[in-house]
Length: 407
Image (tube, rainbow, N blue to C red; front, side, top):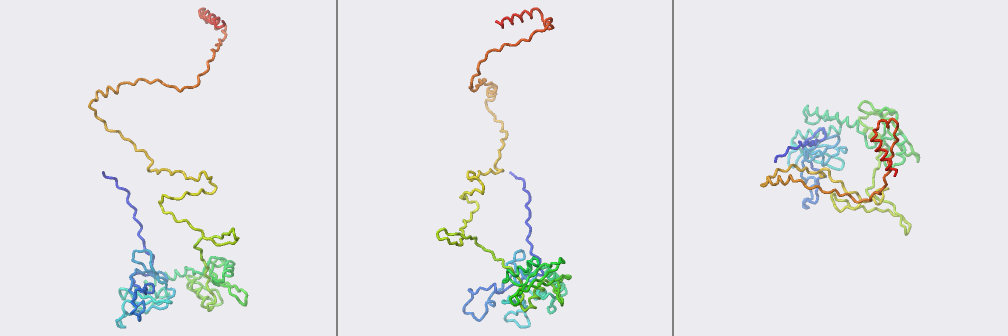
């Protein structure tokens, strides 16, 4: 039996990748791909990086980070390369090739590590190098082999990166007042001695609060940072212009020979629940970690009885039986049965016309009512007008009945 088609299924939204300045395939070989246990001990003169194989990713550049994905349809990255510790970007000629042909490889040097990349064409190599240098140096490089269209794309990425940095706040920014900033620096000297906060004049600017120790005394200073266009100006005797708040913080750090350290609040949280418990025998207090119950498996029939809530009577601790499912709590209507054909239909018709004898009505036995004497009827007196209308026969019967009742 054919069934009616159900409603069409809603299409799931297709995951989309985040917006990148530039994206494409990259083959990466770096410190995170090392596997020293798989190396042959007879090869000791080569570095681990040289013995590795390249691993292919779909890569995207956003801000100062290169995000690496398994494929171009995966919205979640699996690795990322931070360009904040950028040192240099050079071509990496493959082994056995002439120095005149650098090939399609380049090397990214960061503080403490080197990462090698390989692409499928010289054009792709120049594009990746150009976009990386653009976001790091905040200018379009002029020493690369680029077409006018490529330079235009990098100029657009440069505008987006400047706008991102202008609105991005450094980690030492805290939304606190002037007094609160001073108290934080006094209370947490190990977290830093300089923080960025909103300005107190309500103009949309910012302020830098610093705390230093001079001959055993605390010295607190406040510096005003004004917003001008897309940049910022440090309001000192000789104003200093900066393109972002990060540059403002870096200016204070670099021009004080590292004496000012950006404030980094410590946000360590405990991962295990514990409490102080007093020992009744010796009176000492100890730190106790309770034993947590094992997690219940969904659908487990052997579940413990639930404890009554606060203020609930103990006799109501047993839960009520579950309400039957609405879809299962229904009555199946019985349709008209098909007419049955009998051989002796005439005899059955006569039998159906017979009337069953009436059954006597049985009443429940109850207390018998008490017998009461007959009350004497009260006869209203006959008026003169009524006597004239009553015939003599009726008057005689009435007097006879009255005499009988009096006896």
